[in-house]
Every structure is written in structure tokens, then in C-alpha cells.
Image 1 (cartoon, rainbow, N blue to C red):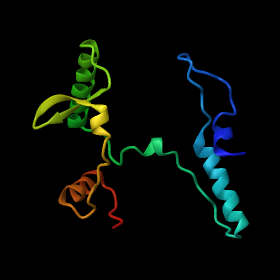
Image 2: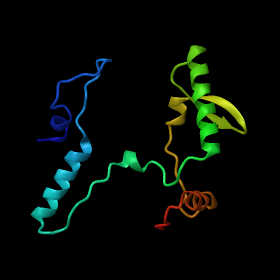
Image 3: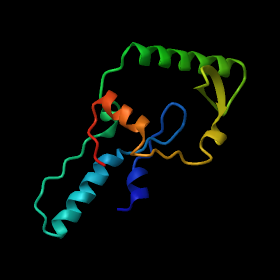
Image 4: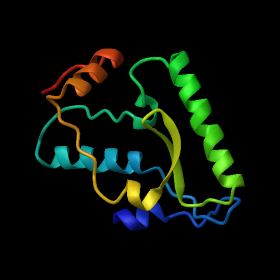
Length: 129
């Protein structure tokens, strides 16, 4: 069964009429396990759903405030009639950002930068570099 067939094996739709897709994680886990069996590697493959690993530390008060402000600004933008925008902070000002501009070029993180190391320290993540 190919990837597309696996995702679309159910013809169910949600309340908005969008197709309900199958869990790709389970499919990938099965494919990886079968691949390693074929090359005679006897190791147990563990699949950890990445949605449970969004953060390495608990949200603090600053995170809660930031999320509240971003959410409120998103609602204000929607009520103002904007679409295709996201909210953010630029030079300490709350701004609306057009999504096509935000995703036009990929953002790269320098794994040797000071800011990345600050992020690792604050979240308690290991430095694999």
C-alpha cells in the first residue's frame, strides 16, 4: 500500500467536509520496522508521537502572556477583516504579518549561534552538535 492510499483509506470527513486522514506515524513505524527486518537488524523501533514533545520545559508566565497577546491579536485581525495573516512581535510592537511573506524563504538556525545555545539552555535540551 502506497503512502497516498494509506492516508486516504478512510472516506470519512470532519464537520467542515475535510477528509479525515489516517495517522501517518503508525504507518511510518510499520514501514521502518519491516525495513530493518529485511536487512536483519534486530532492534526494537520505538515511535514517539512528536505532538507530545513540543516543549522540553513547562510553559512559564511569560509564555502564557505571549500566547494570550498573540491569540487576542489574531482575533482582532480576523474581526478587522484580514485573512492570510499571522501575528507576531517586531521591535516590541504587535504586528500582522502576511503569511506568504513569512513562508517565502526558509529560516535557518545557526547551531553555533549564541541565541541557539540560549534556547538549548532555557529548555534543557542536549546540544547534539
